Image (cartoon, rainbow, N blue to C red; front, side, top):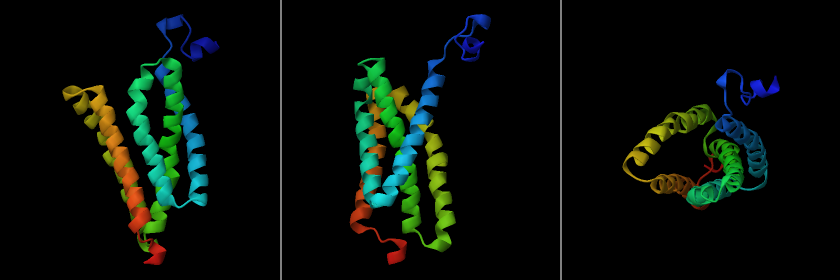
Length: 168
């Protein structure tokens, strides 16, 4: 039945696996985040969107552990906000690539962007594992906040000093 399909039935010794549902929920919230990010790319300069959204991600990383210690409901709420902001940045950085690269190199620029997102991003597990092996969870989230802060400051730099492709 439905309970068995969801993994909550007693048949076969299967048990509820909340992490599967949490990840699905994160992706659902991500749809909203991408929509909002897409709207923002049409309404504000992308540099400010990058700076603001990655700034929020840095703050969320800093408050993650204290909020997690408050219980499941606050953690789920923070997870929803985190999920939205993780996906808000996608349309913003895609639009930034489009605005800062000449048309003849745009495809290659997107390739490098996704190499960074998925290729270098795949190193995240290694970085997190290394930090957790030699330091604390707090150090991990401080490091994650640092990565987001660098991205936010990049947005600030572009807002002040960036030369868009059409202006070059």
